Length: 170
Image (cartoon, rainbow, N blue to C red; front, side):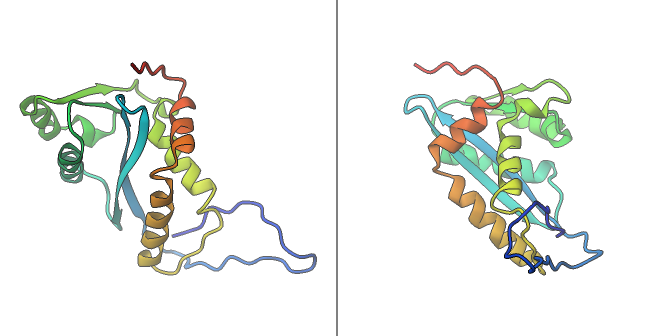
Protein backbone atom coordinates (compact mmCIF):
# COMPACT_ATOMS: atom_id res chain seq x y z
CA UNK A 1 0.00 0.00 0.00
CA UNK A 2 3.01 2.31 0.32
CA UNK A 3 3.60 4.37 -2.82
CA UNK A 4 6.77 4.23 -4.86
CA UNK A 5 7.97 7.80 -4.39
CA UNK A 6 9.61 9.55 -7.34
CA UNK A 7 10.55 13.13 -8.00
CA UNK A 8 7.70 15.32 -9.12
CA UNK A 9 6.98 18.90 -10.07
CA UNK A 10 4.81 21.40 -8.27
CA UNK A 11 4.38 25.16 -8.25
CA UNK A 12 7.07 27.00 -6.31
CA UNK A 13 6.19 27.18 -2.62
CA UNK A 14 3.64 24.32 -2.80
CA UNK A 15 5.35 21.16 -1.61
CA UNK A 16 3.42 18.07 -2.76
CA UNK A 17 2.29 15.67 -0.04
CA UNK A 18 1.59 11.95 -0.39
CA UNK A 19 -0.89 10.65 2.15
CA UNK A 20 -0.81 6.95 2.90
CA UNK A 21 -1.88 4.40 5.45
CA UNK A 22 1.07 3.53 7.64
CA UNK A 23 1.71 0.04 8.97
CA UNK A 24 -0.43 -1.48 6.23
CA UNK A 25 1.05 -4.65 4.80
CA UNK A 26 -1.69 -5.23 2.25
CA UNK A 27 -0.65 -5.77 -1.35
CA UNK A 28 -1.86 -6.81 -4.76
CA UNK A 29 -0.03 -9.80 -6.18
CA UNK A 30 -0.02 -10.32 -9.93
CA UNK A 31 0.67 -13.09 -12.39
CA UNK A 32 1.18 -12.31 -16.05
CA UNK A 33 2.21 -13.67 -19.42
CA UNK A 34 3.69 -11.65 -22.26
CA UNK A 35 2.63 -13.66 -25.30
CA UNK A 36 3.77 -13.53 -28.87
CA UNK A 37 1.75 -14.96 -31.74
CA UNK A 38 4.51 -15.82 -34.28
CA UNK A 39 2.06 -15.92 -37.20
CA UNK A 40 1.03 -12.31 -36.56
CA UNK A 41 4.25 -11.08 -34.90
CA UNK A 42 2.07 -9.38 -32.28
CA UNK A 43 2.52 -9.29 -28.52
CA UNK A 44 -0.30 -9.50 -26.01
CA UNK A 45 -0.27 -9.16 -22.23
CA UNK A 46 -2.44 -11.44 -20.11
CA UNK A 47 -2.63 -10.93 -16.36
CA UNK A 48 -4.53 -11.68 -13.18
CA UNK A 49 -4.50 -9.70 -9.96
CA UNK A 50 -4.86 -11.24 -6.51
CA UNK A 51 -5.56 -8.66 -3.79
CA UNK A 52 -3.93 -9.39 -0.45
CA UNK A 53 -2.73 -12.86 -1.52
CA UNK A 54 0.50 -14.59 -2.39
CA UNK A 55 0.93 -16.34 -5.74
CA UNK A 56 0.95 -20.08 -5.15
CA UNK A 57 0.74 -23.26 -7.23
CA UNK A 58 -3.06 -23.28 -7.31
CA UNK A 59 -3.16 -19.75 -8.76
CA UNK A 60 -0.47 -20.61 -11.31
CA UNK A 61 -2.40 -23.70 -12.45
CA UNK A 62 -5.59 -21.66 -12.76
CA UNK A 63 -3.79 -18.99 -14.81
CA UNK A 64 -2.22 -21.64 -17.07
CA UNK A 65 -5.59 -23.27 -17.71
CA UNK A 66 -7.05 -19.88 -18.70
CA UNK A 67 -4.12 -19.24 -21.06
CA UNK A 68 -4.62 -22.65 -22.66
CA UNK A 69 -8.30 -21.88 -23.27
CA UNK A 70 -7.51 -18.43 -24.68
CA UNK A 71 -4.54 -19.28 -26.90
CA UNK A 72 -4.72 -21.83 -29.73
CA UNK A 73 -1.84 -24.03 -30.82
CA UNK A 74 1.35 -24.88 -28.98
CA UNK A 75 2.30 -22.80 -25.97
CA UNK A 76 5.96 -22.35 -25.07
CA UNK A 77 6.43 -20.84 -21.63
CA UNK A 78 9.66 -19.20 -20.58
CA UNK A 79 9.62 -19.13 -16.78
CA UNK A 80 11.78 -17.92 -13.96
CA UNK A 81 12.55 -20.35 -11.18
CA UNK A 82 9.79 -19.17 -8.82
CA UNK A 83 8.89 -22.11 -6.53
CA UNK A 84 5.27 -22.56 -7.74
CA UNK A 85 6.56 -22.80 -11.34
CA UNK A 86 8.67 -25.80 -10.34
CA UNK A 87 6.06 -27.59 -8.20
CA UNK A 88 5.03 -31.21 -8.73
CA UNK A 89 1.49 -30.13 -9.59
CA UNK A 90 2.77 -27.91 -12.42
CA UNK A 91 5.12 -30.65 -13.66
CA UNK A 92 2.24 -33.14 -13.81
CA UNK A 93 0.09 -30.59 -15.68
CA UNK A 94 2.88 -30.07 -18.22
CA UNK A 95 3.19 -33.84 -18.66
CA UNK A 96 -0.49 -34.35 -19.52
CA UNK A 97 -0.98 -31.37 -21.84
CA UNK A 98 0.56 -32.08 -25.23
CA UNK A 99 0.73 -28.50 -26.47
CA UNK A 100 2.42 -27.05 -23.38
CA UNK A 101 6.21 -26.69 -23.34
CA UNK A 102 8.21 -25.07 -20.55
CA UNK A 103 11.74 -23.70 -20.49
CA UNK A 104 13.31 -22.14 -17.40
CA UNK A 105 15.41 -19.01 -17.26
CA UNK A 106 18.74 -19.23 -15.42
CA UNK A 107 18.62 -18.74 -11.67
CA UNK A 108 18.76 -15.16 -10.42
CA UNK A 109 18.31 -13.60 -13.86
CA UNK A 110 15.30 -11.26 -13.62
CA UNK A 111 16.83 -9.12 -16.38
CA UNK A 112 16.00 -11.95 -18.82
CA UNK A 113 12.31 -12.04 -17.87
CA UNK A 114 10.22 -9.65 -20.02
CA UNK A 115 7.37 -9.68 -17.49
CA UNK A 116 9.73 -8.13 -14.93
CA UNK A 117 10.02 -5.19 -17.35
CA UNK A 118 6.21 -4.94 -17.39
CA UNK A 119 6.18 -4.70 -13.57
CA UNK A 120 9.02 -2.18 -13.50
CA UNK A 121 7.34 0.04 -16.10
CA UNK A 122 3.98 -0.10 -14.34
CA UNK A 123 5.43 0.70 -10.91
CA UNK A 124 7.80 3.42 -12.12
CA UNK A 125 5.48 5.22 -14.54
CA UNK A 126 1.70 5.19 -14.20
CA UNK A 127 1.72 4.09 -10.56
CA UNK A 128 4.61 6.18 -9.24
CA UNK A 129 3.54 8.47 -6.38
CA UNK A 130 0.12 6.78 -6.34
CA UNK A 131 -1.37 6.72 -2.88
CA UNK A 132 -4.40 4.60 -2.13
CA UNK A 133 -6.17 4.16 1.15
CA UNK A 134 -7.81 0.81 0.36
CA UNK A 135 -6.80 -2.46 -1.23
CA UNK A 136 -9.79 -2.16 -3.59
CA UNK A 137 -8.52 1.15 -4.91
CA UNK A 138 -5.01 -0.26 -5.39
CA UNK A 139 -6.46 -3.24 -7.27
CA UNK A 140 -8.57 -0.99 -9.49
CA UNK A 141 -5.64 1.28 -10.33
CA UNK A 142 -3.37 -1.70 -11.03
CA UNK A 143 -5.96 -3.30 -13.30
CA UNK A 144 -6.55 -0.03 -15.17
CA UNK A 145 -2.82 0.52 -15.75
CA UNK A 146 -2.16 -3.05 -16.86
CA UNK A 147 -5.16 -3.03 -19.21
CA UNK A 148 -3.84 0.11 -20.84
CA UNK A 149 -0.63 -1.83 -21.65
CA UNK A 150 -2.34 -4.90 -23.13
CA UNK A 151 -2.42 -3.74 -26.73
CA UNK A 152 0.52 -1.30 -26.78
CA UNK A 153 2.61 -3.17 -29.34
CA UNK A 154 5.65 -0.88 -29.28
CA UNK A 155 5.81 -0.93 -25.49
CA UNK A 156 5.24 -4.70 -25.19
CA UNK A 157 7.89 -5.32 -27.85
CA UNK A 158 10.31 -3.05 -25.95
CA UNK A 159 9.83 -5.13 -22.78
CA UNK A 160 10.97 -8.17 -24.72
CA UNK A 161 13.81 -6.40 -26.54
CA UNK A 162 15.17 -5.07 -23.22
CA UNK A 163 15.94 -8.66 -22.14
CA UNK A 164 18.38 -9.16 -25.01
CA UNK A 165 16.88 -12.57 -25.80
CA UNK A 166 16.82 -13.45 -29.47
CA UNK A 167 13.49 -13.95 -31.13
CA UNK A 168 13.15 -15.66 -34.47
CA UNK A 169 9.92 -15.07 -36.32
CA UNK A 170 8.93 -16.57 -39.67
